[in-house]
Length: 114
Length: 113
Image (cartoon, rainbow over all chains, first blue to last red; front, top):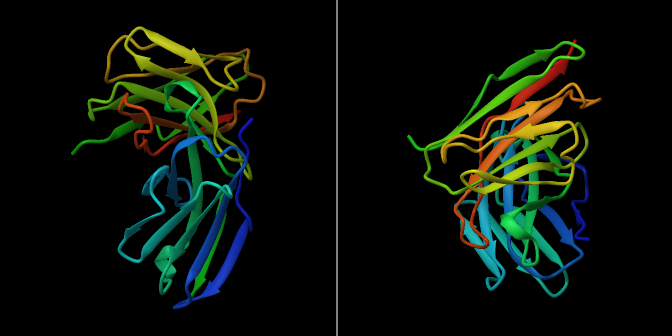
């Protein structure tokens, strides 16, 4: 069974520092890995989608890497801002799972202090 | 604008009562999903549907029911058989093709009173 883990569960950094968020998964037979942002009491906003054939994906200050062989993905947020404070979730779609079902990690709650 | 609309935002259920959560999408996606989120836990799949008039159980389907009569709509009913229904419920949709990106609604918070 696929297990997705995000460590640490919470992270606090001063404004301007780069954020590094980790996601690990136990089964490397995945179609893709998706990073989401969730603000308190809100739904999930898709940040980046990395296909299994890709090594990284970039959007503005966000960069996500994928190392399928080691079962790891890292989300980098450059020059963090207080508005980046949120919970960040990673999720994978497994090749052998029907229906594009997502398996989620528990999330990392980020606080960026002004 | 294209997107997923969940309603209501907040819902209160009395003991023994069934309630229905609405999810509508105008993204023309074939697949739709319901996830449950509890504090400190990741999202867990309740039900999903890949096509109209067909749906499958997820990991925690007991006490829930769904229907998929239209492509745009995937309502979730929380029945009285669900013993611990207080949670945040999220609806999602995606294209049918394997490995497609998923998009989520803004969620419904259900509380038992």
